[in-house]
Image 1 (cartoon, helix red, strand yellow):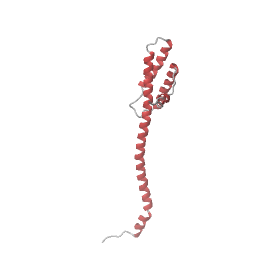
Image 2 (cartoon, rainbow, N blue to C red):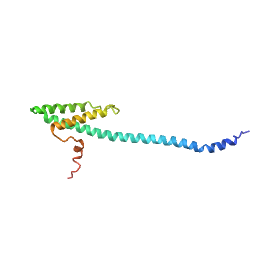
Image 3 (tube, rainbow, N blue to C red):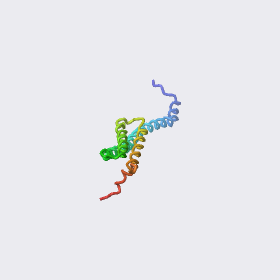
Image 4 (tube, helix red, strand yellow):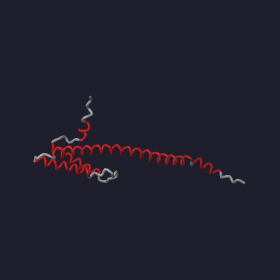
Length: 141
């Protein structure tokens, strides 16, 4: 003979349905939020990584160009300028490109930017990176 559950269990499941659905909804929302957050975090990291890479690449090209221009000069001031340019190139060479979780990234990037501003001052050129990148966007042929 089948044992029937007491009538209180039926009412209990009805009354507790709201709580059960609330807990399930929270869990599903949390999982979906985690998935979306991971995707958005990756996209954000890629975007800012690309910007940082473009900036470092610009500084590297800048340093190589000025090194080439200054290395054959006999001027006393050119030696000081060349030393600063080589220092900038050295900072860029030591930059940890392969470590995405490098703890001192901001500090090292600030050192590179400061050295870039110093070199720009020594060679008498504008020191705003964005000016170089955005300068060619207004041209049309």
